Image 1: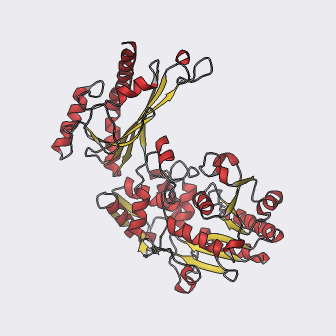
Image 2 (image 1 turned 90 degrees about the horizontal axis):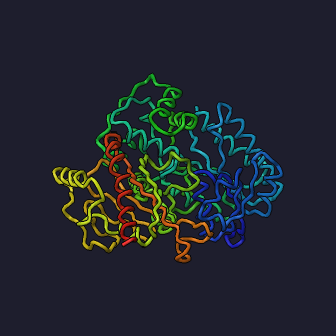
Image 3 (image 1 turned 30 degrees about the vertical axis):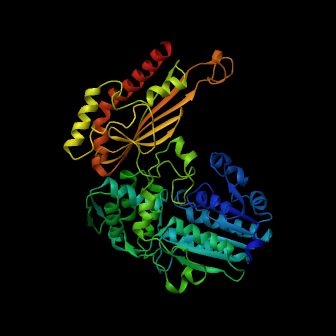
Length: 504
């Protein structure tokens, strides 16, 4: 297919894991993008909403499909129904049939479908359904490029999140026999590359292609290597032949936030060998990434090096990256985060509050319970940490990268946001964030409009912690009573000080 002739693409499943990343990537690659979603509200807060054509409808509705597929060159089929119940395969077949017929009516030039590697004879119900969907999509004569992948490694992928939570939560675990079955995981950034390449492929390219990463590993090996990369102790994994997929999925649903309805078909698929057949390799038809395929370790590092806690500043200051958690991902993706949030308003202006908050630490201290802060610093020093002895370079000036007691200044937006990253020894990662905003006055103005309309400042203080393993979770739970004392008092006292300074 001539790339210059591809003017419009349709992305289904744009509220899902892959689709939510593919849509903005296609925009950046110069395609005109349309998305088909059941609810437009689910993509309303995405950064790319103003750059796509949104069609709200259902994949089983002919009118919705005709509208979505009209004047489309390439249609990405990224729909599945694995969480809808035992008869998900019937629903998937019905949706694929409707879509294929509508694509034929609209004279779509190509369908690109993301399925699952299915080279075994006795496939799981999930993989059998994925293979059947591909056949249905190709049944009406519209050319189809079917990319079959195994586990996709990226923050937000259900398969990866299951691996992440199992490894982080359980120092020791009993597993079924599938723990030693081979699989060929692929980094999400590489998967996205092949999807875009499929849209650009020449007219003669069609058929089924297996997509895999640089290495073939067992699930046991993936858990062991994840633990090593994440800085966890070696995991004890014992294989027990009596654990059925149903029992395994219930167990996964118990110890991880991945719902059992999703975990069940994923676990079912692990009974199969999910490895690329060289004769069907995608590299026989589509170009490899310029930098090559990522190794498992590289893909995992990208997935877990997501140091941006879900705060406003990251949305404004960081470019979108393919392996990050998207707005459209379920709430349980991205790993565990514990948050202690406090909010308070004050009559002091935002400038006055900022002046107080920007002088935290060092000789100023932390506005209450100084002995607890000093004790925490001494404990940190005893265990080889930085302690409180560093203080800060300038008591009144905040610079990104400067140390502040046992914190490091991660982000500053004057008068709006201060984000500190903890550098004390911890079983995890921690941040302390302050966000300031004006309070709308009764006259309808804002606190910054005129002196007479000043209504004060709203302050949000958040302590954020990403635990590492079971020790990290215990650490947070043990400190909850201390947080209940320290954090409310710190915010309250800091704002009182700002009010006193304003009066003076």
